[in-house]
Image: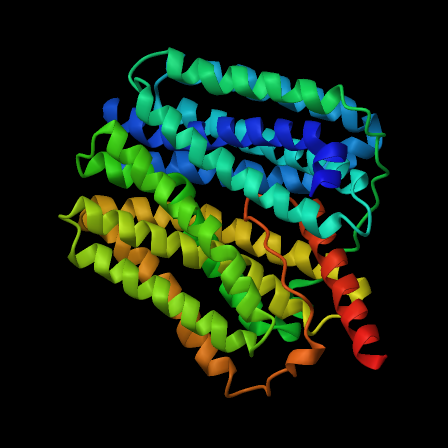
Length: 420
């Protein structure tokens, strides 16, 4: 761990500051939007716009990097992020926020691609696993810290928007001034979605549905909390609980996944998340209950993202894993775009607590489909599965590819050890 920090501290610090800025603006949109009188559907448009931009950025950034280089792309996109964050409180109109969120989603996606390229290039085969784990922890801690800043600030003012702008601007300094060389950027061959579905229908369907769940957690949870009358401090604790749950549960779920049929674990984890979401729907009057529910859903939803990627890799050749993951990230992005729109519309028509019922439906659907798939295909022997590694839905394809490379290396090392 000391070696990882020595070689990558600047990158990790910069990424941590970026995540604080991103996590703060995501929650701030819901709180400030409610104060401005935006409807739940208008706020769902603002939320979906971010994921639309994020998906577009993940597709366009590699070509931008190949044309002008990492440094120019990183600096240009970072400047746009800082500018957009300051513009939000100056034009408090739903249509303006929607456009700005497309821009900021595009830019954050490109920044993640660039920063993760540097981080992966700085890691060695011996330190890649620890580097990825540290990266995931930094991501989670950044989002959690952002909620604490939200709880201490005034969402109705201007200063709270300046803070993420400053943090994002400062984040570029340790990354751009680090001694890490500019990494090479390769091209990943695309995989047709039909091929992806035939390889793993469960990962295909599950990742699409979980995109909707993650978008609700990342964007609509603050909208829900504000609409039911939580104070700003309560909103910050509520939203942070989702990511604390993810941080706490990622390792134990990953440890179990390497020792059993992953479909069974996907079914159980999704079912637990769905049941707790139902609890939130029926017991929404208790703030303490909602905190527990948020912790449980976060502890289920984010590990499921990694589980579905790991399960797909069990059926892929190493050379095809990157292309397959690119397809899964695309599906997750589609789910993240559509999910908030449905959530916001249903909340407006049927009441705010539909937020829980919507997420319960998606997670229970993943559990049910997992059970169905267990009747259609025999389980892969545990000793033939690829090692699990935790990644966040906010990560780009670069981090996912690095995780797969490490997982494949671990599996090969275990096979060699068993053969001795």
